Length: 245
Figure 1: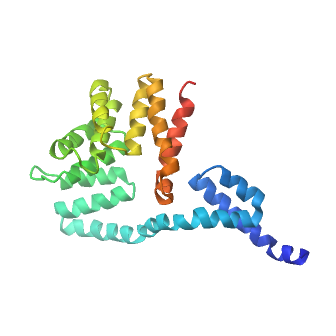
Figure 2 (figure 1 turned 135 degrees about the horizontal axis):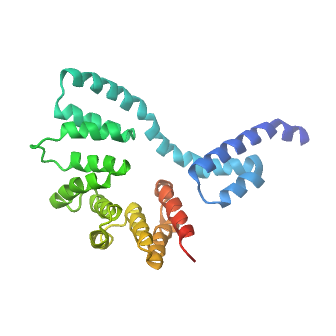
Figure 3 (figure 1 turned 45 degrees about the vertical axis):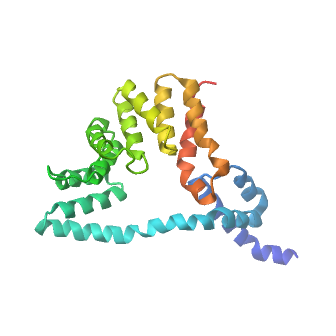
């Protein structure tokens, strides 16, 4: 029996190490850490089966980065000979996915002209502007999108417009748009931005209520959605810690 233990001992340590690395990166429920630490290799194996393997679906997105970057290089070369709006818009979309927000914004600037009637490049440029903390620039783009389609991107455009108003000190407009969008949208991003706005207005009880609404989703979400929502769960938890008791 002891010889069998020593035979599998190194693999148990390896499994525990891999499980702990995944736990730190993905931040699932805390009880998993105790299962990994005290359950040894078997506990780590259970964790891997329950949490790591389902995450493999999310990891597929990482593998898309290689063809995406290859396409970026192709478009960068193509634009030298054919600086068309279509090429610039496609390149901007790819930069946005790569989180190269300054480059994305520059390409959207060149893709958008007085004849552009699609809301999509304006919406995506606004996302880049928000990521760059240029909320003032994002407002006219989002106003244009919302005026054309208030439901755009499952009401996310409206939620981002309220957020941009909040970040530029337009509290009354922010409040009005947040109240409007939160009656029809359940996006955690919108809930969190509203909670953060309420916190900035020292409306702590209301901020706590909206942050808790995000965490209240956790028990009922299917596993794959719960994994996608983890960043918002962490942000909501962090906001609750900053709020006065």
